[in-house]
Length: 258
Image 1 (spheres, rainbow, N blue to C red):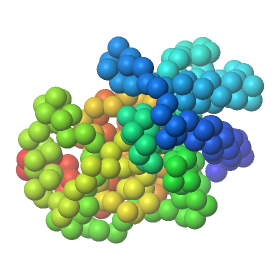
Image 2: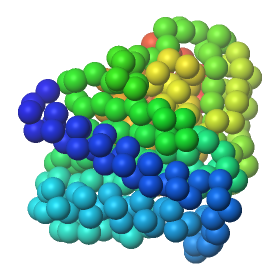
Image 3: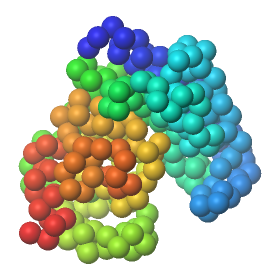
Image 4: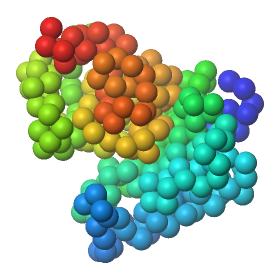
């Protein structure tokens, strides 16, 4: 890995950790939520964490662009480097005192995400990677599961009603019936579970770019796949699938109904 990617990764890990500690000051305190136009919640913790992350990036890398969930784009849209941040992924769970919410930071360079960090403050877990360096979970090397048959796979998923809303119920039924077990540990933590070998498959039929920006390098460096339901590595498909390279062909076949 180049020295620049190393420095970006160190910076992103430190920034995610500091922002995560900030969110803990509001966690399980009865923090009030507001509803955005898309009927998703936002809190003062989301806003302050994003402000903290963005301000830190602007001071360290003033020529870089920043795209955040709460405040949109800062900097030039055509910038070669773009930081994509979600200050609290899983705000619904955060508001309800669930410990699986995460702080997400990804760095896109010339259109490709090269650095990714997902920090889960209430669990004090951090999963981080940069292209060519490997994936690390709390400082130890992480890799995807060696399970090679979907019938033995543990599948994690998002809110089940999303499969109905986005007309993916048939695909979900096929995956569910083919898998060994399923659980609804959705949002970013599901992808972290796959990258660290604790689950074999995570899938969502709908999400935004800031919900997934860190996961291409994290899954790639852990020996896995992150992308759409057709097998295309991307963060812009508004859907997501994470699994191992070994399981990917079978998963795609089941999704297609083959």
